[in-house]
Image 1 (cartoon, rainbow, N blue to C red):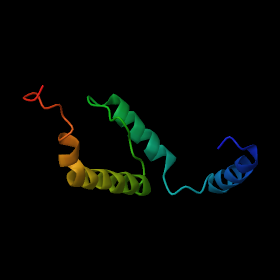
Image 2 (image 1 turned 180 degrees about the horizontal axis):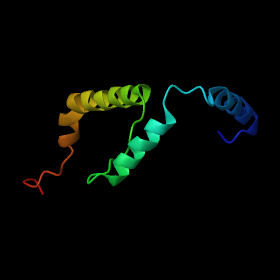
Image 3 (image 1 turned 90 degrees about the vertical axis):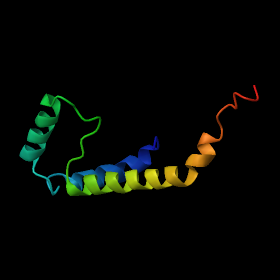
Image 4 (image 1 turned 180 degrees about the vertical axis):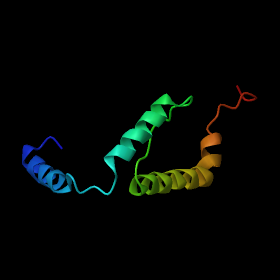
Length: 83
């Protein structure tokens, strides 16, 4: 991504998106304030249905991978009886 020739394309896309996002900036600001003032501040705050959906799908894939490979991971522990 350090190629300056690719930056103009990215900048163009960002300029096209500016002001056309589906979210409400005032609601986003209130959500950030609410999160920051919360007794338990989230590590990451997802704003918008697209963001929530993408993170949920990613988390579900991580959990599926963990379920499928958990045994392999656990079996890498040092066998204290053999040590």
